Length: 425
Ligand code: AMP
Ligand code: ZN
Ligand code: ZN
Image (cartoon, rainbow, N blue to C red; front, side, top):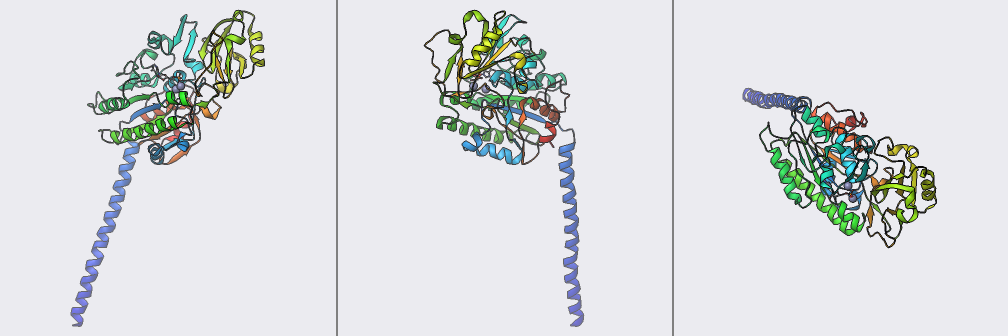
């Protein structure tokens, strides 16, 4: 009995000890496999993909004003910046092209949505197809050109500069801007590109949405209308993330969702018409748009124009050499002597009539240090850090981030070399 009892005990020990050993080995092996797999994912030069999305004028604090669960989950799984600091002037065209090139408008030449280029003797207007598609206006090297020159395929579902041979070439796949193309169809194009055979599949894609800009111009940034559009764009980002997960590149796609600038509440009754306050003979030409104008003054009248601006409530102005340094403004030959900008909550226009009244509730274009002008930066994917909120950084830094992910050599640019290290792993 005793012997049998002893055998039983031995058997019990045998049965419990061996599985423990196996378990330990399994756990160690599984752990090693997991570590190696993650290291391989991060370290091996696997083909990384970048999808760069712009939500025009999505202000940095809309996520605290409105419900944005999908952007919040991108932040949880990836990186969110406290804000993305726009370049000056805080308008759509200069900023999209700054994001694409890593250059301030003063260095890439798209100095406003509307401007006179003495080098071409032409006026650039964002609504003028011939100008928008004329490559001579666009200086510097957009990231799709940097990528193409280094053998990568690229695509654009709209982006400022993509419709012109900016920097020498278009992206491999691109379309003429058409604001009527439904947002869902824009996402379909991105998904179709990412599902193409590997040799045709773009490694870098831009995707542009013109809201919530339009709604916030009409109703102001703090309004139920803007809130509802911001929330539907957030849901759209949820759809995009879900659909990216269904593509063959789901484990190698890095998604950046940003905006070009913010939006400020303005008082439609606080408006200055430059045409009414500056005598016409003082000015050779004046281009721009509310709230910022570049003025070429008639010979000898620069100080007189500045004096008028100084004593007019609601506007400020500088000779180009006196513009505050954080504007990064004043060296490009397309920048004339005088810059005029509305004060916060004010409008400034140039309209050759006295009965002009401005109706919009939201305006952007002001000082990039004005927090209302800041945009968003959210990103997620294998190359981005996880659950990190970084301090604000400049939108000229985005170019270097994209180049680092794609492992391509950047062209000379204005970006801070430290920023990619802050957001990437
Ligand atoms: P803004 O608010 O004046 O700075 O400009 C915003 C507008 O720019 C949007 O409503 C779009 O319609 C327009 N836009 C954006 N990208 C393009 C483009 N690539 N070509 C033409 N218009 C564009
Ligand atoms: Zn914009
Ligand atoms: Zn706008």
